[in-house]
Image (cartoon, rainbow, N blue to C red; front, side, top):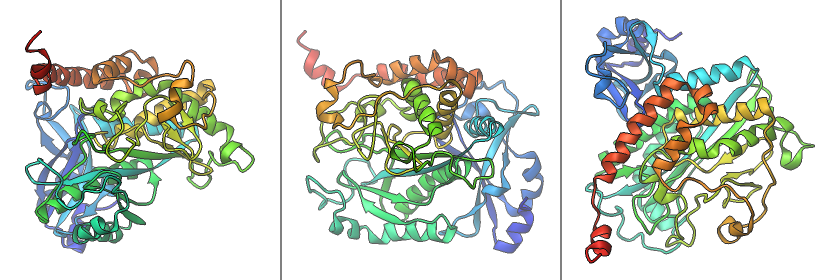
Length: 434
């Protein structure tokens, strides 16, 4: 285990950010001088849990964020600071509904059965004006801007700095591109064990936002910041390995599309529980402007509109791009980095345990022909419907824990209520003369 005091001396770290993600995925932290990190490495940094999006009250005891030394990331753009992912504890016990703790519990259940989850994520984001009013590049106006070389290179200084940081951190970044919406970008790096990827995803969002601010811009992972443009997805690539992490148990050259029977059982679990997972993978009111959306300026949303899977076909909720893995296209940029893999693994393990059939693979364009498929399960139309499905899911409750589900649903119901208090211009324009 890394000795954080020693690491500070060796790496020239003056301060540590002891960080955790709350239920809404907001990164919370305290800045701790290196001289004080010794006691906090064991006891944790103190927080008032009610001050974050956690299901607590002002009367609750202090909550302590105990840093995971293995997660240490020295900020490439500010190397005197070291970032640490932390696990939350209160009254000598783990906080059961804290997202990183939830993921670790689900991973442990998988490992007990001999399964090790590995994931990779594709985090899409927009570069926008600091006030959020428009995309940052006024010349980025093509109706099909995906892979636009000119627009990509106009942001070379920022994109290359982010990629250089990932190279320095050893993440194995391998491509950067302009995505399907004007002002939208994506950066890909190597897959890893699910907890490592989750920590990196949380840090990536922090890094992108910080470096965008450095360049006088603003980065947003909001699911649908502009009505006529493609939204921000967070596609997750998923595979199950043996307990040593050396053999991909999803890979079978003799299997259909290179997938094993175990992979199809796992897929069956994800298909079965997709509606209940939706609240976790699409956790914002705005998320449902991305799902089930009409065609965008580019001609397609690239987001799913039903529970389906196919081969190398991006119109489905789950794509099988290669042998030995799935790409789950349901999640968006608001998804909590820890709850995303926890939900997928919980559903997949149930699929393995109960041999859930995934149904027929559909080799069709879901955007044009999905309506021709009988009895196709549709995705929830709004956050409230999704929350009700999560709340009533026995499998999600068993895998993620009642305390987590109750806390998440309660806080998100409050968010929905706050949204419903808002009166929009559309309502005035269409209802004043009722």
